Image (tube, rainbow, N blue to C red; front, side):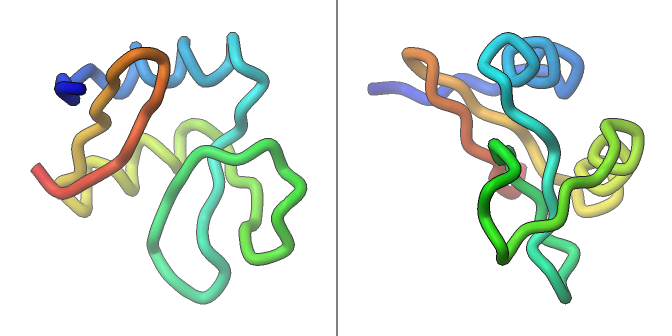
Length: 72
């Protein structure tokens, strides 16, 4: 399975369709998608998610419906 880079806006669109929210790992600047039920994550807003992805030079990759956030 090949992971292809997608834009943050496309990732947000896909995440919303799947019922996912942007989250930050508590006590870090790590971000990921969440359904909001993980106690290690705090839900953040989409603007903060986009800013963090850009600031940390991260890229969202997608393959077969799976998304992963990694360094570019």
